[in-house]
Picture (cartoon, rainbow, N blue to C red):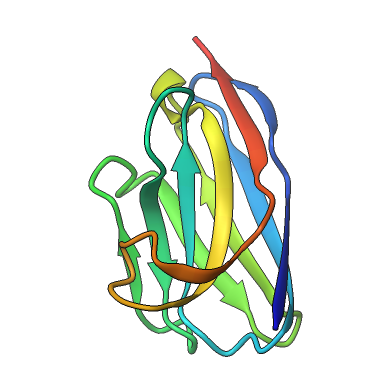
Length: 120
């Protein structure tokens, strides 16, 4: 069993930065990912990271602006978000233990989500 708790969301102006955290407990040695869901839209892939942290993957829409990282000693996943845009507004979720591709929403465990709002 894995429990995931996100934090760090909030309201920020366009061009600003936020750092999301996801505290994990349980079986944490897994690929982990960040997803987001805007109102009226499907949940979409943002970024993923291998259990070692050596491999990272990004959606084209965030590449060059967002950085995913993890600290396995602290059982914590991070998402550094820079140059934020209004279209980044969404609830952000962390997830672990993908059942298929890292960019698919088929993960076994999800956090409750944290709201990110970017004002233009």
